[in-house]
Amino acid sequence: MKNSLLLLLFVTATCIGQVNTGKKIQKSPVEKYIKSIDNLTLEAAYELTKRANETATSLDKKVTITILDVSGNILMTTRGENVGPHNTEASRRKAFTALSTKTATLALLRNAKSNPDTQNLNTLPELLLLSGGAPVWYNGNVIGSIGIAGGGSAENDDLIAKSASISEIGITIK
Image 1 (spheres, rainbow, N blue to C red):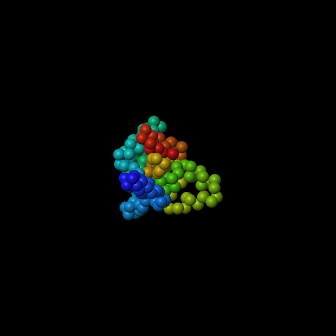
Image 2 (spheres, rainbow, N blue to C red; image 1 turned 90 degrees about the vertical axis):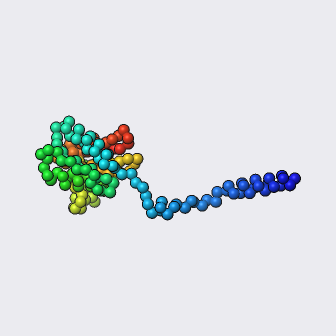
Image 3 (cartoon, one colour; image 1 turned 30 degrees about the horizontal axis):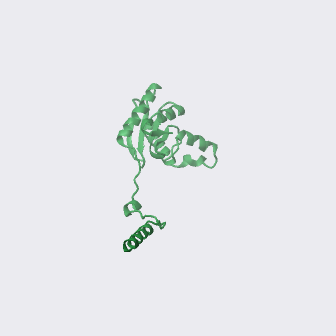
C-alpha cells in the first residue's frame, strides 16, 4: 500500500511537471542581437559572371558586369573589351538599384513611368532606372544583385542579367 501511494504521488508529480505553462523560451542574448543572413560568396560571383558572359557572347555582345553582396558591397566587376568606361558605374548602380528595391530595374523603370507616384524615383542619386539590374534570390531572400551594362538594348541587358541564375542550387535571378 505504501509503495502504491508513493508510486501514485510520483506519477502525479511527473504529470504535473509536464504541463505546458504557455511561456515562451527566451532567446539567448546572442540571438537577440545577432542575425545570420545568407549572402553571395566570391565563388558565386565568379559563376554568375561566367554565366552572364556566356549569354552575352551568344548575343555577340561584350558587357560590363557587377555583382554586389547583400550589403551592397562590390564582389566583382568585369568590363568587356572595348566597352565604354561609363558602363562600369552604370552596371554598379543598376545592381545597387535592384538590390535596394528588390526589383529588376527594367520592371522598376516601366512601373515608375506608368505610375505618377513613383516617377520621381529617378531623382534619387544612387538609383539608376535603366534595365540590366536584377536581385539575386536564395530561399525567398535577396542575397545580392547583378548589374549588366553595354548589351546594346534594354532587353539584352535584362536578358543577360537574368540568365546568370545558378538554379541547380536554388540561386535565382528574377
